[in-house]
Image (cartoon, rainbow, N blue to C red; front, side, top):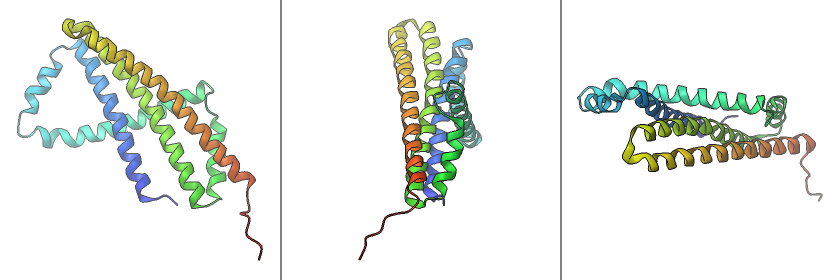
Length: 186
């Protein structure tokens, strides 16, 4: 059973990851088209901007978030940092156990996916900040530090995602081995 707040958290998490990735992509684009941010500023002052752009940006952010999360999971599997078979087997094992274990398992997996996807968003943001540092002389040191901080956060995010996947896997292993819940004898 999936609780309604899991859906809301999944949507908002994927949208947040996508928004971070989108900002990074905009910074990268601005590195090559230096008039991009001023053009966005001019268009954003029009009355129709919020109506015409709000929904597509939200939808694009959600889509970019899903792409970032999927890409990160694929990279983790490819680098053998998580086991693809365990991802499926654990889901099946936990589904048979019940809502308490299943709820915690799904929360851990969702957090792992968000952390992994966030690492992609942070990496893209780091590239965008580095390109902006190259262009903005007065901001070079600040933007370079932001790029380095984003890289450090991306590495930490990957580490935490792997930790969350490992914790979820351990929970699934416990669910497999404890098929009966002990009861108190009268």
